Image (tube, rainbow, N blue to C red; front, side, top):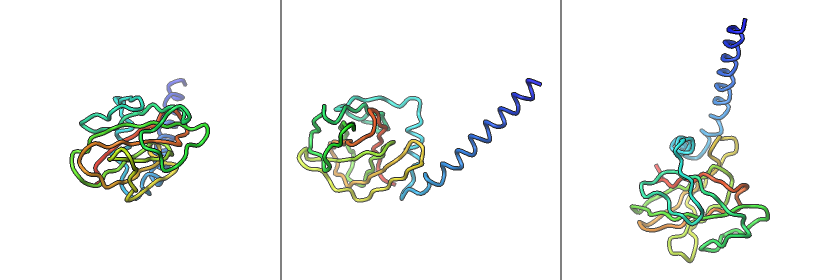
Length: 169
């Protein structure tokens, strides 16, 4: 009898996981561009954790950024949007190897500012965001020149956010 129950429970778990995956697909598939690379990266057990102010790995790749309460951090470039109470903020630096279109993708809803001159923020070329897609909430594209870039996150709901900087496909 216990073997039968174990098989039944395993079957129900499989059905539940498959149903959840099926429900995830519409939201994830409705982004303006594919989120497959980001979803895979964000699900990695080897995702590095970075403190605000750190540099993204030179080989690219996603990271989990530890944010600070917005009132406790001064971002290098003033944000396009003022901080909200009870939100979190932080920034990372990265090096873009070649001029082109790049996307900053976040696991949660937050504001993204990008600067290459250390004084002003760049206007995004495209934005795509969807609620209901596990691990990915927002992706913003920017036209970047080769060189250093500062990515600022603000208005985040919690102290951790996953971030990925990738060349747009």
